Length: 458
Image (tube, rainbow, N blue to C red; front, side, top):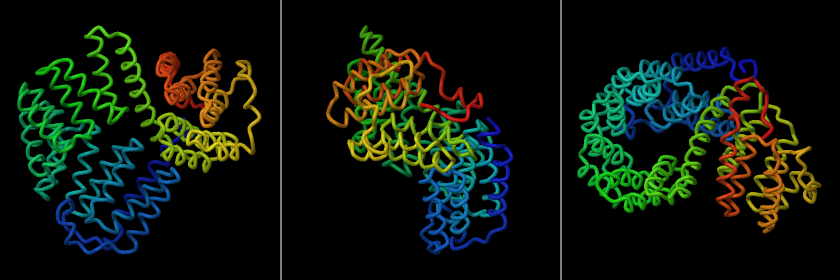
């Protein structure tokens, strides 16, 4: 894999370039006021800042994470008193899984801009991800010293103290964050979790109930309430809270998992099976998305990770993200028929049959052909054909085609999950769950990249 995706030397060279920019460039238009609180007193950012952000946006839109990181770093140098460029740089490092590099980068930034609370804050974020609790806590303490009203730093102090099993300290830090930012539901949820761990259930419930009055459409609030109701309420009340969380966010893995376990305890085995299968699927997708994003960010000449990531996003109905990764795969030399096929699939899923057909060069010849397991093609048989039928309003015919493909033995996990996604679009949840259970028996698509396979065919 090293030869094709993410050469270590390339990563070190990129970091060296960024650190050189950080230590040698001028301050640009940002000033040195502490970030996170008094940015309003800083001079407005100059045109070099806006130009750098525009370059970063273009690179990110094309899926080129390394170019986006370089441009975001230039934006930070142009306006070091603003919080946004720090956040952008941090997010990009996180997407690529480069937390060690990020911690080093923000340490250098803290030395270059000693009055910036943002630099130690984001260093602490990445040290936390590296499980370096004491160093992370020191970084957040530094951020609080520079900007006492920085609610996010108090919040992260609470998160680190929780990891260190200092629950009283965590409750105090989170309580301070809540005082500074009383409208933030996520601070309330974390505080309630710590109160629950400490056995202070009535207080935890009060915190969540108050958050619910302000943020009724935040799934995390309802999930937190469901967890508390498992202890101080009824199973029916807890189930209702978990279901509300899933109405707001169907991809909320923890809520789905806890709902399934609750249903199993209530003897509703078939419902429990469905929720637990979906929870495992969501977890696997989250892990694969994270790893593939990292591989795309390090990739120099292999379009495979970008194609695989695009397939995941298509299955999750995140079509805008899918287009971005397809563009990156194309820039890395992906086969034109593969690119056009995935773009056609997006068009069909969006209901635009004409655009999908145009991507394939006219009405596709495989439309009327029966599925043949001897010449099975995952993209055509499991995705394009049924998606086109669905876009034409022929849902029953699409389901028949999916069932024909399901009968083939030579289907990998990615294709099975594509079929499950289409089944769910058709309202056939039982078939979708069966496909996902079958996909669990297949190796993860990440195994092929770890083994050095240059591209994905699903």
